[in-house]
Length: 396
Length: 91
Image: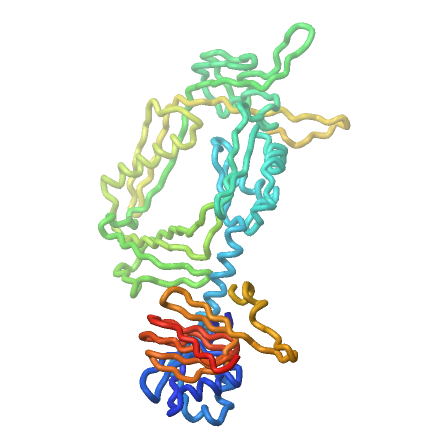
């Protein structure tokens, strides 16, 4: 064993080869692969320890020459002269030994309504996280913990494959509604209008089509008189009404507008930690004013773990100044006013509009009246009084 | 293995109690000869290896002979072996 660990091949010159062999035997030096090249020369192999003893023998020391070094010892000695390589190999070996026994990534499967991040957070609270030993994971225990922590699931299991732990969940048939969704209340008018359509799915209607209602007036009541008692429910339904909305908008004549997409420029850079590494040469902006849109794409590993590297996409859109928006600008102003009115409605549409645009030296002024058909029903939950008469502050 | 099997033959005692180390020769086919309890190497050439033992000498003749292993107790000769001759100098 020692022989194969560190071998030294020697070339020996002597007029009396058998005499040298006798001397080696007398000194109890073990030799291997003795080959006689000619009358005066032979090649032999000795171990490292025996070579040191050979060097101490005066009769032989002068006649030997090292031909080569073989064996694991010499190989390791040459490798040890390269500390970086040794360090990398050690790290690799340790990582190979340790990493397969650890959980590095956690995945979730089977969820439909429950958000993945929420499940991952609960799984982390159950003890499955980055670097956890695979042997420490008990599927039955995790299942019980998850069912207890997440009310929306009825079954869960954990499987591990390599460094990845997969959480299989099966959501319950009926997820419990939130407590706020169960509070009783009425549906009231969001603004002054004339009721056109009333659809009640729960509760009692207190208005009918053609009625004029003011803002805050109850449209569908959550209290139903059953004779001896009053049934308190959460009113549900839709009430559509006809409303009148007025808008005044002013747009300056000299304005800036974005150029077309052909003038856009896209540049990329890397955000490593807090350091931004630009992957472009200069700013490349030829316009005095521009709009920059940044979008960040982080590098994520399976399981939601983010690496500290983010790809930053920078879109530069130049702007130009226009002295007068012109007739097209007036149309744009009317469209903007229409969009504003539509955005103010819960649901509905504009039936008719009357607009007038006045032009001054510096601006256009739009005044419009919009006849709308929109949903005016807005849920208003009742305040629940506690025993001492104080409100819990949930009323809206 | 051979040392264990024939260990009882390695050392014999004369009538006056003197310890004699008897040689053990093991021939494996035509390729390998193992000699235990030898005294020294008298001659070593590619065609002839002569080894001194307690009773005389052992001569291994052949072609391309090399000393594969040589320690103070054991010697292994490899090569194309033609003959193994025993020369008795004394009892």
